Image (cartoon, rainbow, N blue to C red):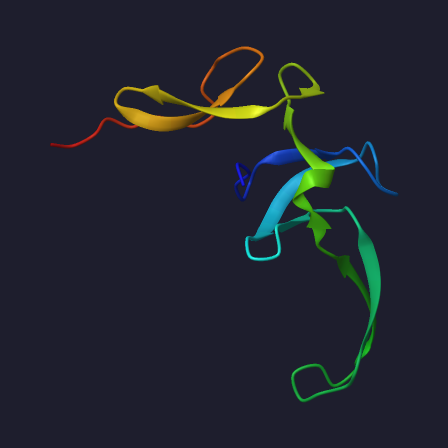
Length: 109
């Protein structure tokens, strides 16, 4: 999976199609991601010592990684991500522009 926590993604399939949000969590074994403000579900919380009130809470549910695409905020469109070598380091690149997405740091010897 080429997505990372903090990436801005756009939903490309499903009931929330077109919504954008930031990746909060990645579930690699299930190949799913949790995106802020997308795929909201209602949960009924049973009262406990930690939460004596309980109640009804809405929160984000996981969405399959194939249903989201990296969103380039500069170009205002979704783009595919690839890998390339820059300054002797493997970095993610935008396949449309060829520019690196990640900050590169110099390798210490």
